[in-house]
Image (cartoon, rainbow, N blue to C red; front, side, top):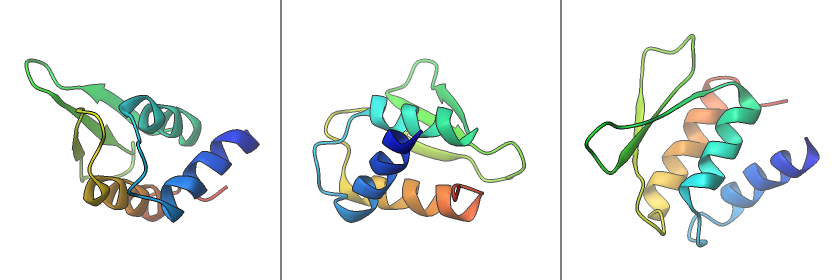
Amino acid sequence: MAKDNDLLERLRRSPMGDWTISDVQTICKRYGFLFRPGSGTSHVQIKHPSAQLILTIPARRPIKPIYIRKFVRYIDEHGGKL
């Protein structure tokens, strides 16, 4: 649990790191977000059960900093604080 909190904080502090889609998936699982690979596309979809917005992130490695920032903001806005 603390390790996932640490991972989110590291994403927040360093969006330009060499982040992978598995890092994003780990955080989604920890905070109760739905993580769905797109069918026939190189993107993944992230959604909180109570949110209307679906966040789409390219699954290529490394993930660009703009997508990491959007992901962290999405987690914060939809209950990512423990």
